[in-house]
Length: 556
Image (cartoon, rainbow, N blue to C red; front, side):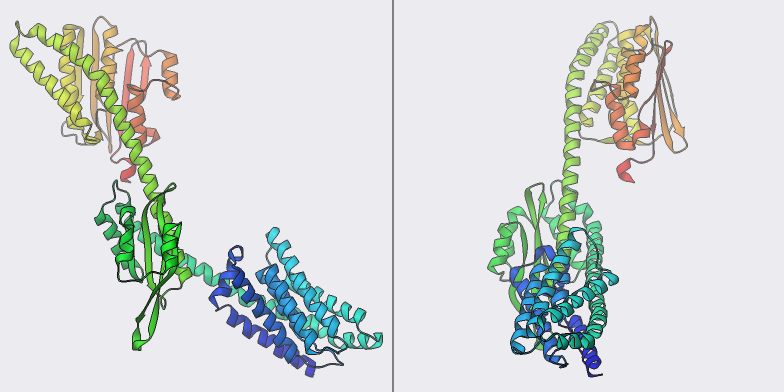
């Protein structure tokens, strides 16, 4: 009975120690982040598991010169949970202590050797399981622990003399040690499962907080440039959502302001600022409730675009509200979000700038040629029809004013777009006179924001490449609402678009950069793929149709 009582006490102590261990931050960090262990931390954890081996030996019951106990759990669990270094160190500590504890005992060498081998066994199995990404299920733990204890019993049979004593000892302690220690190992691991649960809950909570903060800051981060007021607003937002003692969100050129505040940062903090990240304690303690001093925890990160840094984010917490690991989790998530969104917006912004530059190139190529033709036409009417010439000059001014304003306005009302088209048609009608007939069927009071200069290229294409290929050309413009969509149709009576060109346009393999292809690409990028140009063409003419929905994609 004494043997069973001793084993139960040892297992109870094991569970108690395990519950204490999982509440030590360094233990939690090492177990959850085995690839980031520091040597000092591993050494400490090896000493803890080795200490368990020592305690188990000291509390074990004497049975025929043997000391049956749960020492295997310290050495074996150290390796299985924390890796080879911890397991081997724990096994070595336990083996040395077991040997010195009873140097002349009949089982001393066999038990010491078994403890050392159990540490190595835990290290080997840890490596195999991690390499194959296998979890330690309860039945694995039972089999592994039972195998380790069987190895222990074999060592007793080999190294204990005389053999009769060895057999007698194994008969008494073999089955209890195998059964109790196997159960104890399962219970020990079940305690450590709480570590992963708590870490996952902390990470999920910090990610939820980071997403809420990010959502509130999105309108500040998607700007070019981000102003000082934007940085201040984001600081207030982060502080409002979290329990931060202070928040520093500064652009690169204001980094030195961090060290001008009331806090005195440690030298490591300054060094990290110069390198890749910010993670350290502030060298300051403040008096909290009842005059108790409380440490402030600081964690931060660079906010980047590619490999370039454009800002620094540092959060300061009172340690009673947050550990350094929790602060790191939050600030890292925020920094990644700000970096990703800022970079995405800059790519989008540069794309718009490129499109605007291409648009201006298009204007510079079209305007001189059109201006030359229009001035020639107006000059013909100056003597015979001066009033008409004056109207044409006004139309020309309207046309070019619209073109100049279009470089600044990305979206305009459809009325303004029709005004520019009317001016263009008036000039073309004056040029071709009776050879060109224009028909317009436009509903009244249509108001819809459309991309600037989206109609004129289609009308120009209908006149130049369609209607004027006939002796008398006709162009018809229809515009009206179809449900919540604005439908605009521009038709001509030309000879139609050649089949190879039309197929290339529909397949998006056309090599041209402007005209219908340019308009089609702009519509698709703003409203979605199904809202590009629809072209019906035959030998009797061509009809180009566009459908404008109520909102652009980015407007939701």
